[in-house]
Length: 114
Length: 116
Image 1 (cartoon, rainbow over the protein chains, first blue to last red):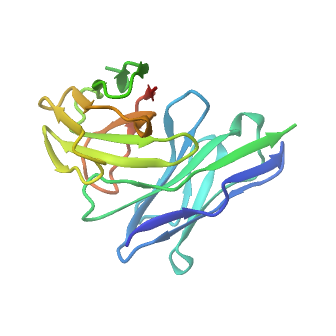
Image 2: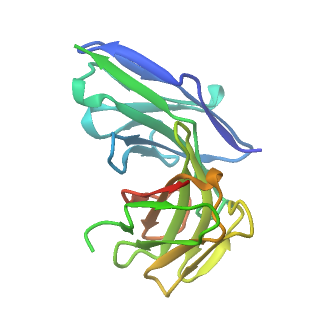
Image 3: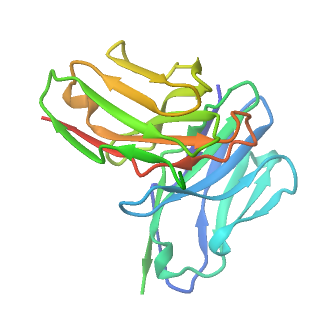
């Protein structure tokens, strides 16, 4: 069965320090992977996506993610956290044959301390 | 329109009442999706439309839930005889095509449903 697991429900970092949000997927097929961000009382926004091109994907606001097939991972990173990065982050996967169905992880809440 | 528009933004209803939630996708987007987000949880897939047909409605939790779409435009999600466990934010999203990998979804702000 296809699934996606976000390993941390909550991550807290200090402003200016690196961010790492972890995501692992399970699939027999080649996946397409996404990270979405949800700020309080706002809609979901796409950060970046991987669709079998370059394994290192750069997104908006300085975020990037690396697809590692051997580890079935797609961790999200940012070198230096900003206060405005505080939000809920969702790792999302879809597969050929799934039609339009996206499978969302449970989410990771990122807190950024001054 | 410029974005995905959902209405109402907030709905409070009594248990047993029917509710209807509306989604206006981005003009030209052929694919439309409904998701549900319960408090503190991730998104649950409900149904996906390609045009006005629904190739995947596997996420609808019960026969109290139904959805329809007119052409490549407005969709309505109807919940009959609402229960307290239906309380959630219902999110609509649209995309140009329903092809996995090309699936960059634009989400609406959601409709928050509270069933008393």
